[in-house]
Image (cartoon, rainbow, N blue to C red; front, side, top):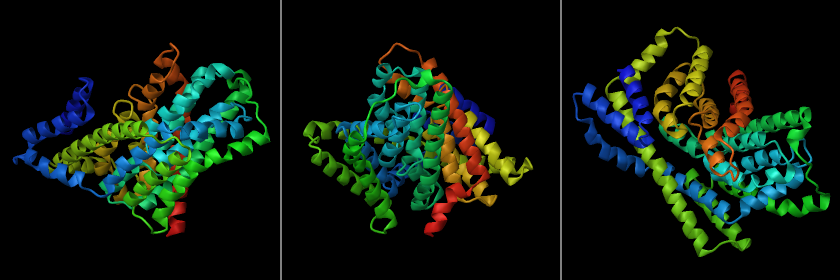
Length: 428
């Protein structure tokens, strides 16, 4: 049964079938082969219950929030401001790539949107300052991954819904690992450019007057982060209401910068509808597939299989991490998470691990999948916005060292769980 499911899913993906369609077709095939009941009739109820989930309403709100920041130029001004503060480090604007990614991640909730936004602003600077292009491309792809770890995160919303975990706890748990990962990325850039000075290009010239003048452009993302996350922990708003407040704050900031227009709003709405439709279709298909897995006994069979391996708790975690890293090479991250988390999380919780901690670990594993070929989405995003004639190989080679940094971060979170659990415990 398990072999049939894996082989069929891989075959459907290799046929270039959209991920949501592949999961839906797989569910229908497994139901017809192994279930005595017409499980296809449950699809209507799944579509309704998923589409009316209050927490999932936050997804289009956060997508719209990121679109507004992108289309009103707030993100580009933020990038140039950070270049004044971080440009003196070995690696210059590559540190701005990571810093801007971290700040944009604190407002958008999407890794792909983060990579696309920062890449669009940053890539024209490569020939101007003479950076090593491969390493520069790697900073964009890797920095973009912070979008699903630093709150607010769309993937964390879906994880919370699927595992019945507290979303506020997940959000606060992602802050410290996200900042630490951004710091490790910047540390690697500094070391690489210190050992190979030519990679870091020409130093960015600036002065304290320009730095201080640029500070107001760093305030909008900080203000939106404070509105969204602060309103949740102040007890003023639910996560869904906080997402709506974030959109209102973004609209007010765009109005203050005189960057809001009807055309900007229409383009932001259209992009939000496209992205939300894609995400929700994957969510619905994955819920249907998970119901099939549970009904035909596949989920229980996988749990029994893991228990018969005789692995200890941490050995099981390492095996799960290796499984995610390998699977991430061949499967899109959102669908991978939705298809596996409902099966894997009960096993992890039964071993005594905190579901909030495991949620952070899953986000890190998904981040790694975003930059591992051949299906690392951020690799394709960065390549698609390049204006030069370089190949995908340049992006892959430049990103490879950052995959190593992500693996180190995964090891740190496994070895020191308090990295993810300290802040939630402090608030409790």
